[in-house]
Amino acid sequence: MKIAPLYRAAGFETTDLKEIALKIAAWEKKSSKPRTVIITQGADPIIVAVGSEVTLHEVETVPKEQIVDTNGAGDAFVGGFLSQYIQGKSLKDSILCGNYAAGEIIQKHGCTFPSTCKYH
Image (cartoon, rainbow, N blue to C red; front, side, top):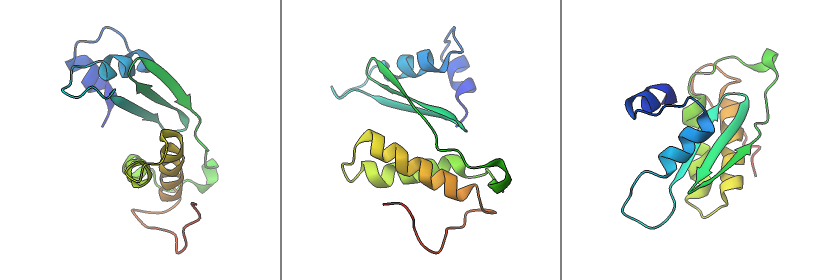
């Protein structure tokens, strides 16, 4: 999902993604657990807002000559992230797996997977 339409529709007066992540994290919700907001930015750091705190997570970049197709990179990130997060892994470890999955998928045409998984 592209974030620009969301911040415009929400009436945010800023385009600073860290501020936007904090504003979204502060949206009202029923549970008392802090909302986690994750914004990926391609090769730029991932923005994570949990409650009222923002952190940046560096992305392990893939050399440009190895990038074949970036379609599906965001979906791959989400899949890798959730595969770890639902197992109770830390936010940091879940992000690392999301990065791994996105990095693998952009080196191939379409949604294809390597024959062996290098992520541990």
